[in-house]
Image (cartoon, rainbow, N blue to C red; front, side, top):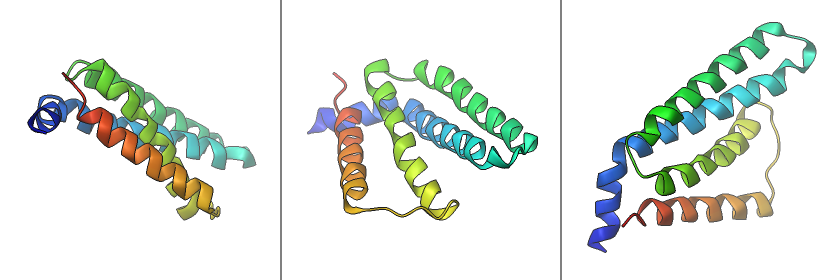
Length: 115
């Protein structure tokens, strides 16, 4: 169990950057979705968010194990669901909630799985 927490300590900076990168890429994709009314500004904002997220991913990979950090990009799926609920007023059914639970469980287990 000690090695589980040691993995988090070893990769904490990279994990935080990947978390922010996932959030930014989700925002970028949401802005692209909202730009369906031909709003060039939202497309541009989406590219900025997505680009910043991509740059943060590059930096994050320098501060942690690739095998730990890359799977954590799946957090963007969770962020996308919550942005869909809050901003676009989408509904969430039981299957999506179950999917969120599985993704979060996987992220926690992978984050502590670095040798």
